[in-house]
Image (cartoon, rainbow, N blue to C red; front, side):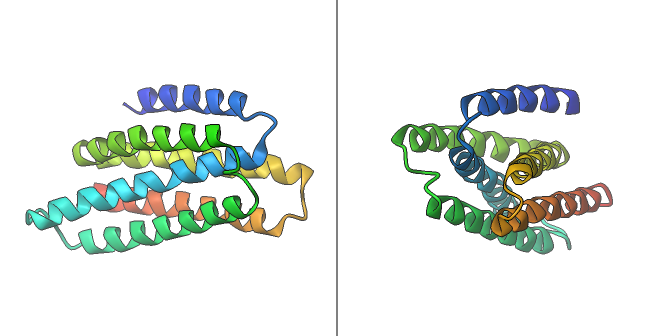
Length: 169
């Protein structure tokens, strides 16, 4: 399954990189719209399972962790909006439709296989870090992007911790 995750993700990333090759702020905005949806999906599934009584001692920790991750990604999105990343209607249209599809895929994926859902999201966060790092080579004084790039690495660490928790259940 991880090979399938990588294949689909790599093709999607290549498409987005091509589409936004010379439009960094718009690419960042689209990535941040997308970046929030797995955390919303994870919360939805955890809440649903918890409401049905399907929970354990790690459920509350994961719910809190994913809530804070969603808030953090929303802060990134707001930063990209301040920079004009959502200026063009085509980018808003594309991102908002893509995020609907991605959200529901992640809901079902997390419900059926949380480990594989985390695998996908870890790869997405790693891609986000690489994307911001490329930008920083040409814009080394952009402190806010440095902070956002570090946040993406923090999310990778947090997701790996969540994955470890799942495998120890």
